[in-house]
Length: 436
Image (spheres, rainbow, N blue to C red):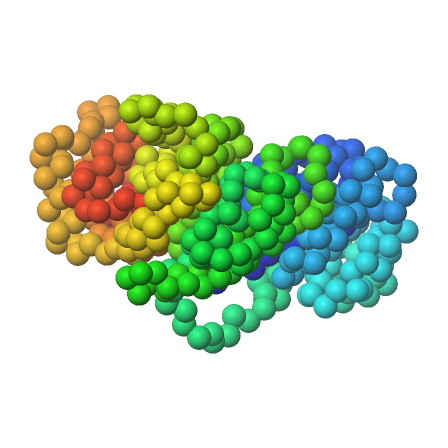
């Protein structure tokens, strides 16, 4: 199930980026005291009281002569259309403005929950200034200060209460996978080639696929798959039409819904910086990953071409060292018959559980061969390890002092676990905890 999406909307200069960064816990958006400075939606994963959700920081809505107003308005309207909950942000310092009322009129047209948050309430005395905002017609305002973090917990409580109920759904046991990548790398062509029929529009025009399209099929070994074709993710900052900006959000939502993500590269174009950003979305989400090099038929090859290309991928995608690589051609269907079986194997690894007794045998053998490090005369002691989650496999290692677990030794333990068990295609997480 995809995470709920929260859109923060409002006129320029009310502090949307500051509130966004406060909730996200890091400085993701540019913060500058100039109206209209945020000119693109920014996305972030966040969590509150165990509830995971995604956030959109919009560029603001305004009707006037500010630079990029048309684009900013379109961005916000798209975010409003796609969000599950909308946070309408206003500023206590300026009070209710004509621009706020124009934003409110746009929001009146949505059936999504709208939560009114009054920002820049930096001290208790300013709380009396929020009551004028009742006139906007969205119920009780929530006073907050994005700069100081005051009231953001109260706001998130209200936001999480407004999320749509997931309810009970029919269990879908199919293996869900999606294709992601830059526009025009051949994602839709891969879908059509696998299905053997034109179920998705294929075009050489970048961004033809505007939406995430789900297609179910059954492989030769009777495994049921759900294939999600997503729109290409373009490089941020490049000028492109708003429907493609809209498709980025859909691609991120498709990743949320996938068990395995196929990162598609173009063999003719080689690896670009944007490919790393695209793959990073799936890696950060903890999904199983397969690297698919498409258009392999279109390049000249010798006996070393594949090995050289694979070496380049490993060097450029060092954080995806666990991901298998397959070289295919949507045009000739070369090696495409191997892809469903590979995805199924990665999905099984993504859900793999290891018994604690077996896991600890591997960890203790690793420590015997490579003793734990010391820091200022104090040695790291590893007591035991246990698996606490799947998708991705997550292990807690109980130690005497987590600060003594150096990154390199954690990586060593991870490599030993990978050497002992088949976790190809899936990230694994190691969490160090002090034994109580």
